[in-house]
Length: 610
Image (cartoon, rainbow, N blue to C red; front, side, top):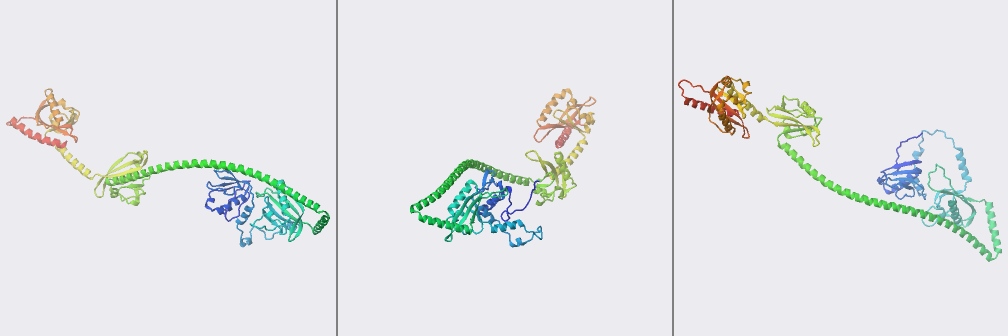
């Protein structure tokens, strides 16, 4: 069964966890100074299992603690725990974790029972250690002292110089050479080494002890990374001490009987034996050092290659960054130019909208106001704070029109523009236009509402309509036949008097061509008259003939006027026709003059209608 625990942890104040397989501490060390980082890295090492992983941020590393961690992935900053040569990290961990206060120590826990039975095994072991265990020192393979048990003043003393805790430099006279040799053999052979009856000079006298150096076996629960050794100083009983002193005195007496040469030879042999052992130990240490230096040299070569590769990568990255920087500079200039153009376009648009005098309102899909021009405030009560509000919530000044929201939705749904004439309370007319708001990508982002002032146009239109009604009444009630035809002769207008003269009704005449009413012998002359009228020439009234519906030929007095559009082009011909009927004593010349005057009057009338 796997368990997952969540807990708050202050890595600066709280005791560390232990037996961890992975520590992920990303982008935290960069906010700490170097002194605090130097305390945290060994703490992470202590908390990890052998072979555990440390995962740091991209801008973090283990710094000078390369002897504690191996690099698995330099780019990802992934490290693996390895062994280290010094015990300083054990000490730093102990000093780094703050001790609990007395109040915390005295605070009883709710889970501890009131009565605690003593652990008999621990009591027995403590008593045996107190009375039977020899003085001991726990050291690493370099002789650094990690723990001291008992009083070691008879065998170790502080060495002169810088303060240190190395058992080899602190050993008293008579103990240093044997301790150095024993420690070296124990490190090489990984086996206990014993030196019996070693005489140590203590306070002007000699003490005989049994020296032992034993490797400390580590179980799976041990999280230390050092090779530890236990050095014991076992003082022999007083009876053996006396026997030893006697044997020394006896040997001294026997040596006195010997010749000086034998004594000198014996002394030289002992010194030679000691030198040989020391030389052997030195050779072994030198070989070990050579292997370590060779390994270190290989590691340095590997590190050098990695550094060279990293340098090349950094050079490439520098060139890429320089290229990116140049591109960013170019993009920045382009963006500045575009911002200037956009600002200019925005100013132009604002001035254009304000200068046109057309009230304009922009709304989005939710009919919320996005922007409006000042003229729109005369029609709808808008203030700057109304931007973002629905247009339906604003009160308008329009009379008889309350379908603005519905019409906007209809335009957004159908995308068909809509124009509506609306009137304000001030009797002002506006053309309300609703158009879909299209972007450059042809997407609909809302609607545009415009208000165009058409008051004058409305007045002119009403006036023209009234004038037209009057003219139509005049034409309808005229005593002369009034017709209108296009340039091809198709009849466009036919008043009641024309019906009475020629016999065709208005419906019949509108489907006829005027050529069917002209006698054959007069068609050439009539054609030339039409050409003159097409050139906008002014013609005097003339006498001609027309054919009626019943086939009669009647004499008429005809006045023709050309109708001209805005571009000066003749688009139709208006005629005033009166049938000629000679009366009793009226002469022909007087009749012509009278009709001529009447024809000019009708000519002005027809021109006004066109």
